[in-house]
Image (cartoon, rainbow, N blue to C red; front, top):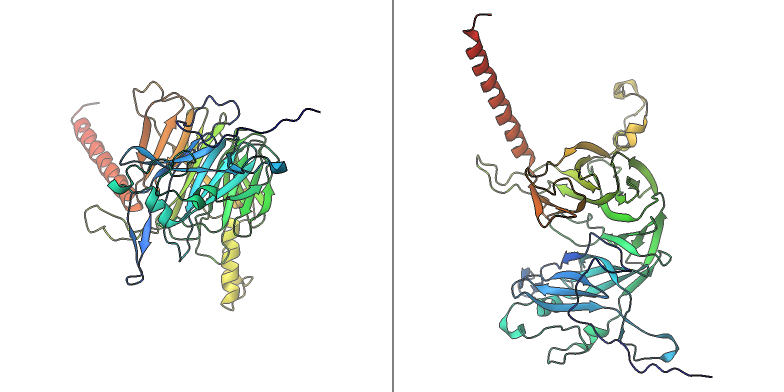
Length: 449
């Protein structure tokens, strides 16, 4: 009998970055993510103050590498060190699988203001969630000269005074639910807090190459349910919660897939409430954002400090080169249920003739959440304006959206106007139209027909 002993194991890797030529990892739109700003909270002030520029995380094979944008140097490395069965190895060998997608959310804990949760989707179908404390983020992402030579702190190859063995060997939370197929998209539920807060609500959604979507409870460390309906790989997932004024709230999830469909799921009923099939090709990316519920900055005429009404927008990019914009609103059926519940709580009879709103009978449109608004016009005289849309992302404030096409080296940035700015723009266009019509009528009045 021949015995084989493990003499060497992969302890670390370096000079690695994300590459589309990988033979095992599928392409993903979530390969970059900013960590939340590191904060320090003192006992005297009890206030959180930002201390350093947050690093940006990027997938790099079997690791996530954080970069300090001020120094243009790597400052952090996150990796899972697998423990081989049978007692072989040291238990500190680098995981041989690859990370496909990442997403970052604030931990939201009062004791650790500025901490972060980093969720990673892997080729083997597992999800690993790393917990970073605020002092670790500030130390690894600091831009001061004392940390200039800190380098790859999460590394077994470098020894320094700042070496933290707990940070290196800390085991992440592992969630398995995609039956060995790669996890292509992942997203935290950040809708329970305010718009300026990125803390997680304890839920996580992941989409696999097999077309399945799993919703997780990261606090209970278990899966809640699985959503089936797509026939292609999931390209993007996003939580949406339009409305918010009634007693019955719509808790939704938007998923896009390579089968050319965009589905809206009702997480309360655990079913699909709308399927968008108007894309002429694969839906390669999707992004949703919540606008409003914040103070409008800038602008003349005393607009500064005004509160904008909440509204939701969904942007999808497909293989036909079009970037479509959708208005995400509460379903009419759910709005009618909310009105009925409000009448019941006030002691009124919702079936009385005085409360009859003469609404038509229920139709399939009553369950629609996304309503088509139009498409974003690409810049003129650009050769790649009709190419496939590779990725679409919103700025955290929701005021800017970036579009990147497959064969383009440029990123198209679009500004999202507020309600007041859109109203002013419309009024200006109507005034110019009336002026042109008046000039045309005056010029044509002197002619003899």
